[in-house]
Length: 419
Ligand code: GDP
Image 1 (cartoon, rainbow, N blue to C red):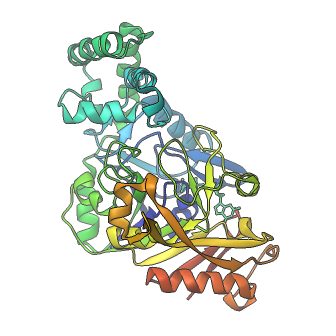
Image 2: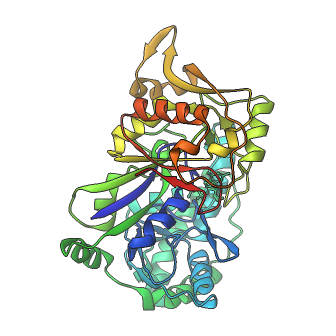
C-alpha cells in the first residue's frame, strides 16, 4: 500500500520526523515532486542532516527519486556522497526522465524576481519555477539527456539562447554563467548519476501489486499547491498528494495519508497570511520553534493555527490521520488562539472562497488556555497537561479525523503515538 506524509500548511510542518518514523517498517521510500527548494532534516546518529533530493530516511532502504522530482545535480551528488562516506547501506534508484534544475534556471529566477519588484513571489531562488516552465514548454533537460555530450550541447544551446534573451531583454538582468562550464559540469554530474538510473514506475508498480508498502515523502505542502493554494504565492506545480500517481507513473489507488501540521502556522516568503502575528509573540514562537528556513535560513513568519486551512487540507488530500508537531513551542504562553472561521466584509465565507481573496480575510478565533512547560518524555496521552489535551481534542473534532501522533520536541523519540 502507498503510505504518504503530506504537509497541511505552508511547508516545514515537521514531515521529516514522520517519514523517518513511518519508515521503520517500510523498505521503500520515494520522492515524487519538488526539488532542492525543500529540505527535510533528520537526526542521523549524532549528526543532524538535511536532505533536499533524496528521501530523508536512510539505512537499508530503497530510496527512489521518481519522474516528477526535479534534480539539482550538485546537491543530489553531495547527498549521495554523504551516504557513501557514512557507510549508509541504502540503495538509490533514480528515474532518468527527471528534469534537471540548471544554474541557468536559478539565474532566471533571480532576474524575474528582481523584475517583479514588490510583486515578487519570495521564491528561494533555486530555479524550480523556471525548470517547470521549460518542462511544460518541452525544451527542458532530463537526466537521460546529460549522458551524450554532443546531444546535451545542442539541447542546452537551444534552451540557453531562449533564456538568455529573456534574462537580458525581458528582465533587464545579467547572465553571469559560462555556457561551456555549465555544459561540462552537467555532463560530468549526469555520468555520475547514471549508475542509479531505473524506471522507478515499473519497480514501484510491481512492489504495490505484490502487496508491499511504499512510503512517499511529499515536498512542500498543501497551500503551496499552484491550483488550490494561495496562488500566485505558491510553488510552480501541484503539491496535493494524489498527484503522486501521475508523478510516479502508477494507477490511482487507495492510500494511507498522514497529514502533518504544526500547532501554530509558519510561512516563508511572501503571500497573504491571515493569522500572522506581527507582535513579540511571533519572535517568541520563532525563537522557541527555531523557525528559520532549512535551505534558505530565512526567518519564518509565525502566526496562530488556522484550523479552516487544516480542515480544507484534510479534504483536498483525503488525509486519514493527523500528526501534530511543536506542541512544546506554545507552552507557557498567556493564551493560545486558533482560527475557526473566516469573515470578509462581515460575512462568513468558506475556505475555497477565502483563498481567492486571502489578503481580505478576517479570522475568527477561539482561545485556549496555555499549558505549562512540557516534560522531556511522555508515555501516554493521560500524562499530558489537561490544557493541551483540550486543545488537541478540539483540533481532532474540528478536522473530523483522529490525531495519531503528538510531537512535543525535536527528538525522534519525543513523539506520542495514540493507539
Ligand atoms: P519538513 O520540511 O516538514 O520536513 O520539516 P523538517 O522535518 O525539515 O523540519 C522540522 C524541524 O522541526 C526539524 O528541525 C525538527 O527536528 C523540528 N521538530 C519536529 N518536531 C518538533 C517538535 O515537536 N518540537 C520542536 N521544538 N521541534 C520539532
